Image 1 (spheres, helix red, strand yellow):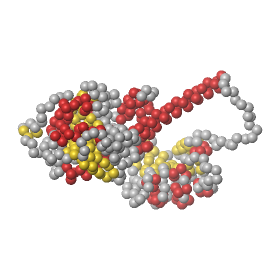
Image 2 (cartoon, one colour):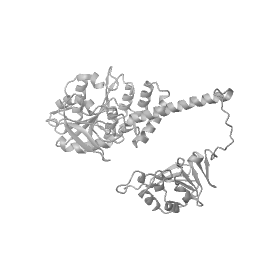
Image 3 (cartoon, one colour):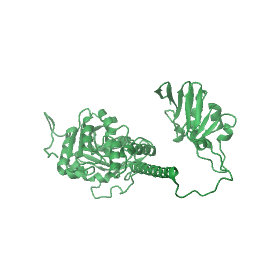
Image 4 (cartoon, one colour):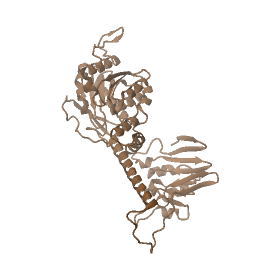
Length: 473
């Protein structure tokens, strides 16, 4: 409420709802955004799915003449009480709704009767509203269709149409098939991003066993992980963040070498993965806030003066980067196989699956994924967030990565205020960077972490903290 956007050309948007502090127990629909669109001296109200106490908050505004109004929540009974229209007094109402079931009662009918014209999308199709100084002109995409009349010819059509009719039929079939393919790809891609499935129960694979830990996200989701304390950490803690379609157990092999280097390790399950709650992931959209909740929880466990480094793989790298851009408690980042733009990586995955026009479909997949997750998966992009991160960053990347090419990793590295160090691993693809890099790569990562967050008990020479001599990959 109170936000305004100037679209230029004399057109403005003003948010009338929701207010900053919602009422306790308020539903998502009650917090629906309500926009006032003003142009050419005319006003229109877009009400979304507003209902319940949100309606009461809206009518608390002083009434102003409305040229047009969208009926809230598809014309549903609980969202369209008569007193709403007594307050709005619209000159025209548009409702996006399906045809009513036989015998059902339409709550908008009695309200509109004699008060205002009512355009229904199931009757007139999509409705276009054109602002004009002389008024607001509304037009439906189709005219209302009359019922079929008796006496219509019942002569059967030929199964093989001839001439232009055959061509039109064939074209229609091809377009229909193409449309179905596009919709299928978009739906499959979007659901794969936000809900890839809990294929392996967390901590079921071989590896060290830690202490189960829990944290509560800002939206109430309970997050799960495992805690591996190091006796000599003095508060230094690495947060391990997994990638898509896996859980924290995929990263357990990193725990023993980090413990030997004197770091506590927290292996974390992302929301909607492993043992963490939540129904859908968001590629860092909400997970970056979850990481801040983890830091709040782990601070007292880490020891006096805790210092945190985040090590994320692929999707986890994006989460770590987003969190570090907003939380100064993250002192160092290790980004394993990061992407600099999710749309580009989605397009590469679609291309590998032989899907036509992957660059055109990738934004549509992400748009659909945003509607499923309720938050953007790809904005802001990692390459856009990098200039906000001022802590040391190490990027480890496979030179044969087909999803996030190494050239993209170099571009991402250059976007940081202090360019990130890039370790390129020959022969490694997207998910096997550490496996191919082996002990030499783990030594390089350990040296980076010790240099970025020194052990305060270790001697510091004139050139900084002691860094062990390790092989370079």
